[in-house]
Amino acid sequence: MTAIATAPAPSRTYPSLRAAWIPLAALCLAFFVEMVDNTLLSIALPTIGRDLDSSTTALQWVTGAYSLTFGGLLLTAGSMADRLGRRRVLLVGLAVFGLLSLGVIWVSTGGELIALRACLGIAAAAMAPITNSLVFRLFDDEKLRMRAMTVMIVVGMSGFVLGPLLGGTALAHFKWQWLLVVNAPIALIAAVGVRLGVPADRPEDLTKDRLDLPGAALSVLTIGLACYSLTSGVQHGWLSAATIGSILGAVVAGFAFVWHERRSASPMLDLKLFSNGTVRGAAIAQIGTSIAMAAVMFGLILHFQYAYGWSPMRAGLANLPIIMTMIAATPLSEWLAKRFGHRIACLVGAACLGGSLAGLAWGVSHGYLVIAVCMVVMTIGLRTVMTICAIALVGAMPENRTSMGTALNDTAQEVGTSVGTAVIGTMIALLVTTQLPVGTWSHALVQSFFHGERIAYAVLAVVVGVIAAAGALTLTDSHTTEEHPTDAD
Image (cartoon, rainbow, N blue to C red; front, side, top):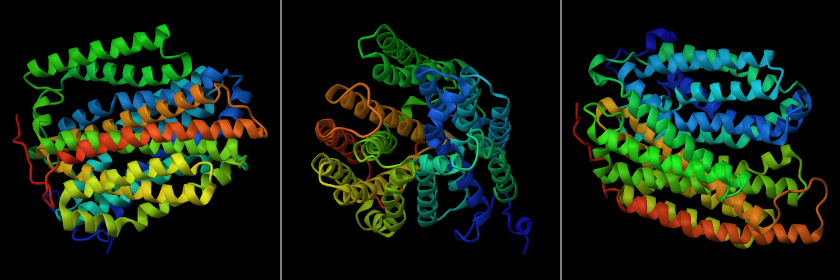
């Protein structure tokens, strides 16, 4: 049977993951390329600096520009998708992402590359919330949705974790520009799969509200300045004019956003949704999980490459326990949700997150085996909380707001990622050194680095445990999402 023949009608869903392999593979591929682009160029920064004669600050913005526009536009993209059509916006995002990736061929300066990365972040923001949202349209069965979401999360985290490894391997054979050029054929393949396997949006599944342009602008300003303030705090100091100005700007824009959304007839983000414990708690818990993941990923990359002196490829391979556990922990997470319900399952996940960070606080100076065990425990917590909260949050949204639900989920994760990276980076800078030397480290510097890690992970264990547990406590005891707020058209 051909792929076209097996594609569902707009009102039909798939009976199994195997039957949905074309659209599921396409959505996973789109999600993978979004996530891998977050970390893919990090390993190539020294080479890029030499080729484009770029400063250290410029190189930091090569990666920062992508995450800044990506995080700032997630809510706006989700809002547009719920109005214009989810599949339509995703296909446009894939096309723009692929074409922009080819633009690296003509890049000749650091400023041009930064601008290109910022534009790629915009295109990725148009893809991220929709890939997860469309998974829910493929299946009616809650168990299939959970397994499909597991596949998506595993693929996305694989891209995030394997970015430096894939980049380092590619640099051994190709120029650094190919790290972006390869996005074009990947985006094309994903677009074909989405076009063939994902049913077109039905008008009744979309909201008729006007696009809230002032709300969109204020949300971009709030999230963008908040993300920038965390980056600026690490780069320029927390009392610098740039950092304080961006924090104040984010606060003012945030208050203006809330004021506008409360008074708008067609708000981009209906703030009444946060009166729903499932929506509020899932978003809070997702922030906690992303703080843990980002802090551990950032901290261990430094740990393996600097303190241990490992190559980028070996350091990338050292993170494989995360990916392997993401897959292996699926039955355990499903059993927890089925047996105890969302609240208890997520509390167990929160305990795993806090416990693994506490374990790292002790284990960073006791060798890789202890670290690997902590990575496994952390990933069990990540797998449980991330999947259950993503399903619960989107399921608790009105039918014509599912893209906004996934955008809210992704925004919470992006905020957590920024916080986690900023916290671990700042604490290492304060406790160890502001400039990590290259080459072989002295014994004293290694011990100082371990000391800084111990304090940082101990603090994070408390912060993450409290945030994730607080979010989990507001979820229901149901084994499925029961809370469905009414549509406020």
